[in-house]
Image (cartoon, rainbow, N blue to C red; front, side, top):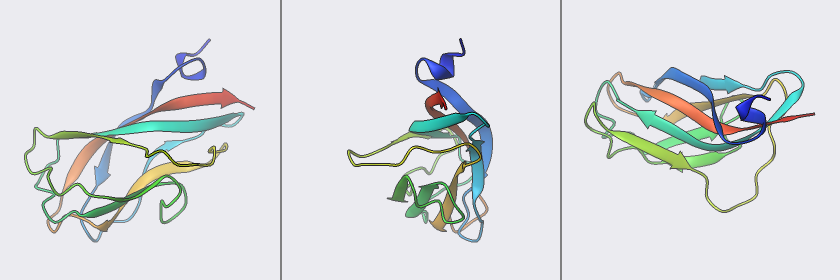
Length: 127
């Protein structure tokens, strides 16, 4: 059995994600055929530049990544050695289906060109 189908596992990543204000969505993980996925947390680490201006990032599926967490503030990540666990709040979510592309998009992102490494933790379920 694959660990991802019996417990929490690193599903996606490490992936370099773009976090500047003008960047679009970066996909962290695409749910494989025959499975559904439930995200648990995203580890974001080692930004290449200060995210001081980055006050709104959305995570999830779709072009706008609005299906998991919205308005994530990363402005305190200013050193290249910083990391942050982004975890869900205690509300209802929808299970992600095969082909869904889970990612991150800067809404009010960093003012300078910045990337970071992202790793998605979650569980897969056979459907």
